[in-house]
Image (cartoon, rainbow, N blue to C red; front, top):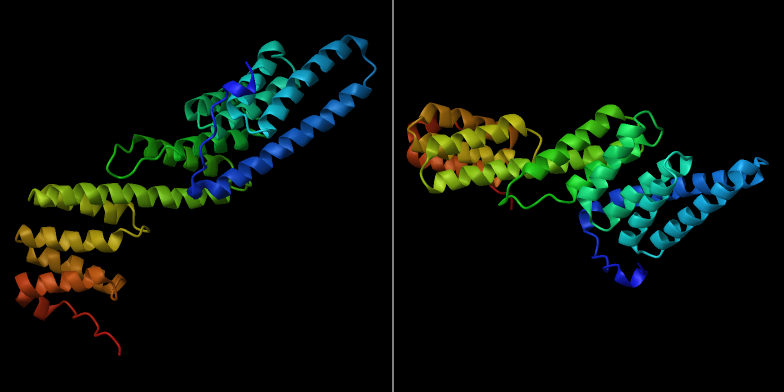
Amino acid sequence: MTASFVPALRARPHHLVSGSRLLAASLLAVSLVLTAGCARNRNKPRQDQAYVARDVETLYSLARDTLEKGDYRLAAMMFDEVERQHPYSVWARRAQLMSAFSYYASRQYSEAIMTSQRFLSLHPGNRDAAYAYYIIALSYYEQIADVARDQKITQQALTALQELVRRFPDSRYAADARLKIDLVNDHLAGKELDIGRFYARNRQWISAAIRYRNVIDEYQTTSHVPEALYRLVEANLALGLQDEALRNAAVLSANYPGSKWYERAYALMHKYAPNATADGAKAPAAPVG
C-alpha cells in the first residue's frame, strides 16, 4: 500500500489543542528514546542480533517517517507490522504506543483505544502506561456528542479521565485530564438540564424536578447550577410546593445573587407565591447607573 491510498486527515477540533500538543510532545520523546536505543544496538558486538536489529530498525524508521509526513493511517499499519514481525523485541512495545497515537491522529478512535488497552495488558507497569491511559481518555473525549444525543461515550470519557488521574496524579497528563473532567461534567449537567426542560415542556413536573435536582446535587461546580435552581423553583411552583420553591430561590439568592436566573426566580415567586416572597425572598439588587 502506498501513501496515495491514505485518506486526508480532517482538521483537528479546537477543544483538544492542549491534549494534542501533549501527545505530540510525548510521541517525540518516545521516538528520541528509540533512536538512542537504536544507536546503542548498532554498537553491540553480538552478531546473532545484527540482522534482526537492522531489519527492525528499517521497519520502524519507515513507519516513523510515514507518521512525520502526516500519513497517520498508513503509519498505524506500519507500526503494527513492526509488532507483528518482531513481537518479542523492545521495538514491539514502542511500536504499540506509536500505533495507538497514529490511530488517534487519524481519528480511528476505536483502534486507538484497543491498541492502548493491549499495550496496558501486556505491559501494565511500563513507564509509558500513563501515556496509554491518556490516549484512551482522549479517544473517548474526541467522540463526545452534543447534549441532544446519547451520552454513553461522554460517561466513558469521564471514567477514562478519572482513571488516569487516579493512577497517575502527578503525571504530565493529569492537569489536562482534570481540566477535561470539568468540561465533561459540565456537558453531562447540560444533558440533564436539557432532559428536565423537555419534561417541563410536556408538563411532567415531577420528572423535570428530579433532573434539575440531579444537576444541583451531582454537578455542583458546573455552570448549569443557577439555571437548574431556577427551573426547580418553576417546577415546585407548578406542583404547588411554595415552601420548597422558596427554599430553592433562597439558595439561588445566596449563591448567585446577581444572576439573571435569580431575577427570573424572584419574578416567578412574586407572581405565583407573593406571600412567600414577602416573608423570605430578597428582591434582586437594582442595576447601578
